[in-house]
Picture 1: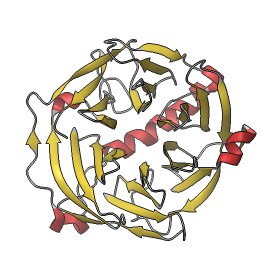
Picture 2: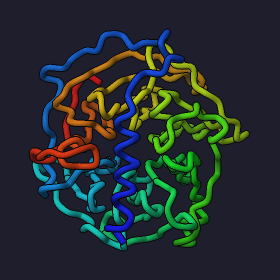
Picture 3: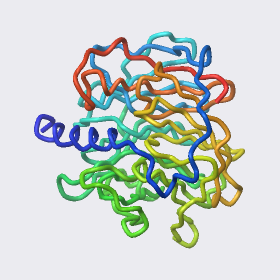
Length: 331
């Protein structure tokens, strides 16, 4: 199954990650000169394995344990505070999982893991036991990418190929399994992009549960989804755009942190309280970020996934170095 599904998935991902130029529509919002970091970027911990190609990350707010997912084979790693080398928490192929893209730990300590080829599974972080799983109906033509969880326990997940946002409610979670169904269709709202490229990628939710923010990594846009009315609108960006934006992290104070993969860039934005506007406040570009795919912020540091997708992974040939998670100060 993996041999049949993975090549097409890798081709789609490669196309998405290598799309580059800032669209003309954003020319008037060119980002300010990047602040190239010096001592800001260090290594938090190492991931064991020769071809990990990590993509997702999540931090358990209760105990600061960090979970990292492998795009290559679906392994999920765990690093407790102070550990310099992560350990395998869920081995490759657990429950038939092919990839581990988006990761989140919810308020009750359950770990959500998306598999781009099928859907999402939920695990008990104490035992590693699968508690629930949800799959998209039909085969092929999908890429379940990232997810966020709102205060009421509802999960929302992006599909980078179908340009829809799926939903899993607390009632569905309690049932344990079911079909992953679209809640919002953004096809009529996204800027048209080249065939075969990704659009929707990272997604976050307002801490008050009023809206979602989902990024279009090809057009560089940020979209707001009103959870009360269902209205979908484009966030007004000031000072830059979100081209190549992959993972997002939204803090309770309205600070949005973004990983831009192929440019080895991290940006910080201030989002207005109603989520309709966002202003660029900081840019860090550093080749040692090694194609950052996502990030997780806790007070004092930001953890960033160094995917090395361009070193023998989905972006091209080469030999990777040790796979690590970066710690970035000042973002």
